[in-house]
Image (cartoon, rainbow, N blue to C red; front, side, top):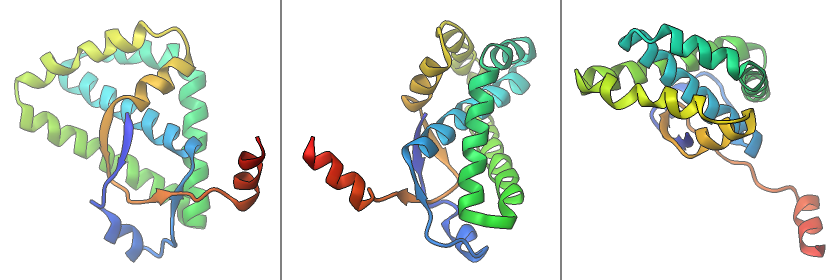
Length: 160
């Protein structure tokens, strides 16, 4: 799921004392995979597909754990001691957003979303899961900018 860093909750984050936040490529992957995982969780709960969700979690446990740690790293970097609370709030807001989408879609939600389980289970690796997640679009309840390349990184790229 390509992270769409919407301004939906920018005011909330800023009012909570967040300094300028930027997202690195590894952060993008973490947000993408978390968005996909949350979407599948809401689909499972809404459409009685618990077994499919459990199979997804078991198959991709190492990648999901790795991406969760990366997400936690972003929250630690941007929120310090409040990182865990902010991450929990983010996950809750993301799940609520997905759930609201389900309510808006009504009886079409399950028909339109259950196929995602077949798609992700057909992938061969965690790396493919990350790529798959990057190709999806999910509105994210945070606002952040891309991190600027460091001067040494820029210089190194020019030499090659």
